[in-house]
Length: 261
Length: 257
Image 1 (tube, rainbow over the protein chains, first blue to last red):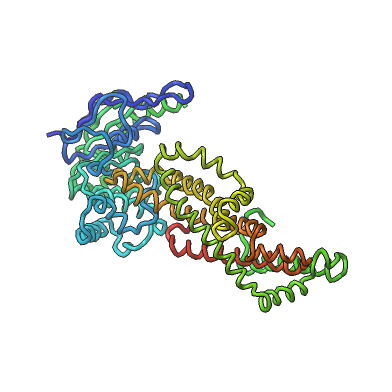
Image 2: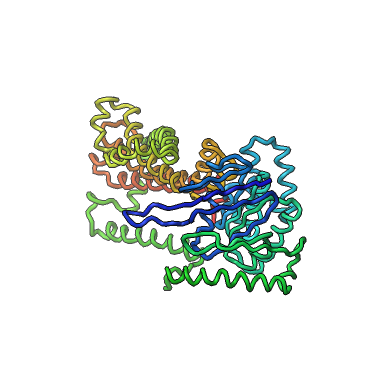
């Protein structure tokens, strides 16, 4: 059974002031089954974020259609949770209220919201920070909270748009393990956009490589590394082989992108 | 001095007070030294003496109370109308397109120029004074609130949408709380402007208030009283500003850096 189906979806942004229209995404088809963890790897400006925003319903495709469990996607909804690269916790809400935001919008009663908050505070290791405001947290803590906020809503699919892009390397590695740990337990369907090759391999069950603008899926690489994955796997020969292969794939695109800019 | 280099708190307060001291010293030198005629400018000691007499013998406290009530009354009325309107304009673009051109135009209509008309319509009573403040404040608040709501980070709205918030939820639980500190800050600024309108309103056809006292003092050439009145306005303005800032900090602890 296939969950998310993307059929011939493209996006062309109209030209600004009579300029040429921008082809952000070439017609793309993709199926993401239940419990899959797909990472989308590509150079900056390749349309990978555009693809994610189309799935989220924050943008409308120029052609093609997207369905989730058979229902067409036409607007944003709680069935497609999203974590952004920028820090998007609501600054006027505490960590606990941020995590409960989606449940509150759904009209879930207070006791069940509190229960969900307690559970997620534990899973992301932020017990004791319930009443902190986002500005009192580090970047890593904010993104952990953002992941909990999206997942507390129990979406059918989780969309992550370079969520660790602004974090330092060490924090980023810890966040990857945390996210992978959550996924290994909950087995959510995940679409994860990144330009970091190691991140794409470490997290994904398969990596989709996108071309430089106009974006198009160029290659699909299955990642058959066993679960649960430990961070030491990053130094294994299998990991290195995958990394070498993806580096080749992505390098050609990066060169193209650099020439065009 | 290095650009943008911070200074200690003590130094900041001391420098701030120093200017007041220099200002009063220059004023004392000019008046007590006999360089400026008493007819045109009272010296600080006379000002204090006349101010004390005003408060104790001429019921000036009542005038101060009347003026404060007019400012606060007119300002609250304006805020009650303008804040909801501004929020709607900021949130809903058709409403903005409908109202924004008119409000932008009306904002430049000088409130003081309406006084003759308002006297014609509302007489010389309290209503006319309140209306001057109202007209002077309402369009400013509408535009500033609309701007604050329009300026809410787009990605916060998008995050709320992906969490299942619908139109009402976005308005009530994202746009309004996100812009609340900016709205409060706009109100603080406009309240400061309202103080200048009230005095103008009281200069014409009024029988009480600080502005009325100032006009009366002019007839008596009591420059000490005039200056005292002006200083009282400044002090009240400073206090209301301080209260507003303090209230905003209490209400929006999350917005402080």
